[in-house]
Image (cartoon, rainbow, N blue to C red; front, side, top):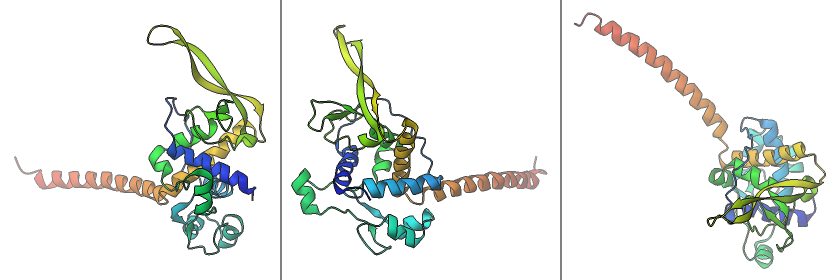
Length: 247
């Protein structure tokens, strides 16, 4: 388990997803797949170790997560349950509410429905969009959430990024420097493709947390659609048989 200050800071990072104003950048495609159980397992690990110190998933129970993601209770308790010893509890926040209010002014929000509200592409892009900005109190800003108050707590994994600006004309046809992208200037502990997978797994897990039955609903929807198509064929043939002698 990582140090508590990292849990707190990354919790704030996730909270910024729900709290700050969106930027105008085109979102990156996350490639999240709700049917990829291994990705969901890794995402659960990443979330519980990096985000659950500040953010709860109040609509998701540990035993439901264990069943859906094929995680045995023993492993669930050992590696993913840090705030309770009961598998039927919901995923609770590890930080005391009084501490949250004292440190941040309010308790960080629950993230149960963040993927349903913003989408996995937004979560994925946001976690990849930090860059160095010494004018900000935390020394960092975000391409997808301009002037975010959240620190770049995953910098040790991703590395530090710098902003990329481009000259574009404004309304008066005068040259204006516009932030268009970020680029890596010093590597982190993970290779770029490894970090992409790391945040993709988090986005995927939060998609699952927002609707645990989503994968089953989608597969059932395909079955029902195919059933109705076959039924339509038989109904049409039956109709032709009944009406073949009617002129």
